Amino acid sequence: MQENTNGVNPEIVRIGEKVLAGGVIAHDEALCLTETRGTDLLLLFTYASKIRERFAGDGVDLCSIVNARSGRCSEDCAFCAQSAHYHADGPVYSLLDEDTVLRKAWEARRTGANRFDMVTNGRGVREEDTDFRRILQILRRVREETGLKTCASLGTLTFGAARALVEAGVTRYNHNIETAESFFSKIVSTHTFAERVETVRIVKAAGMEACCGGIIGLGESAEQRLDFAFTLRELGADSVPVNILNPRAGTPLQDIEPLAPMEILKYLALFRFILPDKIIRYAGGREVGLRELQPLGFLAGVNGMLIGDYLTTRGRKPEEDLALLRDLQWT
Image (cartoon, rainbow, N blue to C red; front, side, top):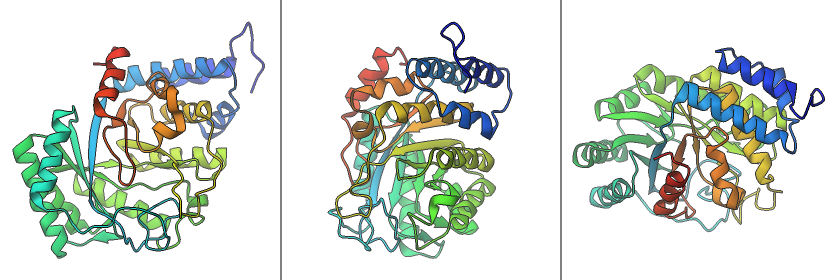
């Protein structure tokens, strides 16, 4: 990265102005910006915020999730407390009944969510699965009775299952690619990166928006973190949840060194440079990874947030997040 001129880093300005003008950031330019340090980070955040404002507007997309079926998962994902391959202390239960999910959806609406995502463990679903037919019925009721936009995260999909979700009123499907292709096999052993990508393509072909992101802080390199973001751009992800690893006891990543808060914020800003018009969403781990610096994410390009609890960990109280947004004059 070039030396600062009169206290202003010329590369941040050049690349930021390029993106603001409608240009596309290249991989080598993004890699250059990973070297940003000190007060130059504030300039990077400012440009990320300007890019967000110009291409994604001032709205904040608020989504709440329900862990509708948990534990004993067949998949070997090194970060996950639900995997049957490890001995983490995660919740274990079969598919929740309709009334329980409806109650949680109403709670989500009362706390300010505009979307409700039904999440289940396991490899994936097919249209003939009994649980899948029950899920479709529950999602119909959520949409019809609460007025919330409905999302689902059920693992891999056939095209027929994807179309059934569309017919049930689901408008967005979450299926994270987790990390860069070059790092994927180090954290997942029971399915491939290509399988993840194929489901994202099925989601788009079926007519749903793709909610597709992953986790940073798994031990990946700076370049792999960028590769992850550029793959999301290639896939046309509409909503990008960025989780920050919150190491769970009993998983292989339980002792990993966490990313520094300002490093996390830097990559949130870089994701905005790479994905100027998308929803970049705060997801799990922000409370632990960023602590008191959470508000800065919204000044560094973030424009979406999961509110309430996550799959296996507690989140902040929704009223605290809504107060944060009011203080930032976003609501």
